[in-house]
Image 1 (tube, one colour):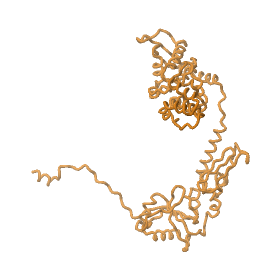
Image 2 (cartoon, rainbow, N blue to C red; image 1 turned 90 degrees about the vertical axis):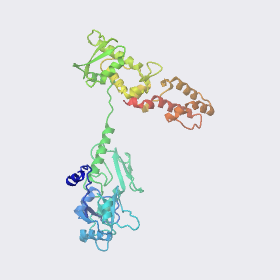
Image 3 (tube, rainbow, N blue to C red; image 1 turned 45 degrees about the vertical axis):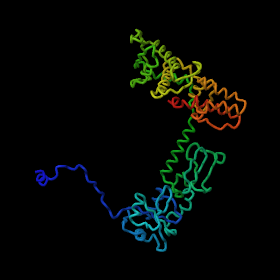
Image 4 (cartoon, rainbow, N blue to C red; image 1 turned 180 degrees about the vertical axis):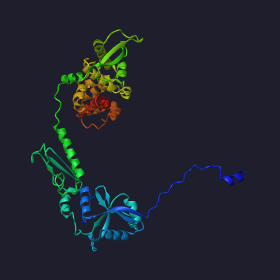
Length: 453
């Protein structure tokens, strides 16, 4: 029964595996062929050069090759394609683009660049054909002799009267530096530049394309704008008044704050999607049982909330210091994970703009970091809140000999390796630089992530 059914209706099991569709095999393929004009050509053609070669008839678009052709047949077909442009006494070599240079394909001994290998090696690249002698109709003879300087130069930047040309070859003829003393800078209008690099005219003495010229001009304009930008001379009071004028009294943002957890309530309020810093703050306090105080916020609860918030920031794990008025940032993994450092910065800004107290607990080192940047500060021992580390640093500074200095740094070897300060001490004078590097790591570099939030 089963045999008869299978023979009549076929196999019961239906195969779900699809057969792989093979791609169609083509015996021929097409490729652009570019005929160079002289045997010294070693650079990939730019857009401007290709345009000139195309107008001279030195480019064959979508030239049809056959995979069965030998190398001799390929060269013979290319000669027939260009006609009288290639004399019989001139031999041809096939090149491919590699970066900005033209190179010959390297094959194993015994291999020949036939049609099949040509299709595999060149893929989407154009086929460059270089003659053994200069062609009679060299359309780029004038630009090639003058354009070698631009061909060997990788780029040039001109700004404020200083011109620097960079060379990617081992030649000194392409390195030029013009200082403002040799030529006065031009702050407006057209910039001075070496011939063929940033010339606006229709000169053909360079192979640089129009897109490269526009990119260079955009870079120069950006440099000029940044160097001519004047720093902001407004005082902090004027900036705060300008920000406070943007507060809209018709729009309110409510804060329900428990007096026992002011920081947690403010973090929840600042993290809300509906929070708007330009809205007027409406604060309502409650106790541990959730009973709200019956008071209308006419400004008093808001100022009290901002005062309590600044006091809560001092006691938070985000700040550390020996004195309450000299607090520095510390590294707390939970605060960093929950982005509480950003909320602390927002709370300080809101307090300044909405008429609250200023953050008077910041240390001079942290204040300098905020105003002038971390690279300008020079921390001292007073900025170190860790008493154990502070004692060890004082012991290093009190060392009077190299042996005593080595003994003082021995308990800190693991810390020095973590801070990147582990080094061989050669003399007693190295202790000052060592202590300063440790202070920069402990006070500044260690908390760079929280500081940038």
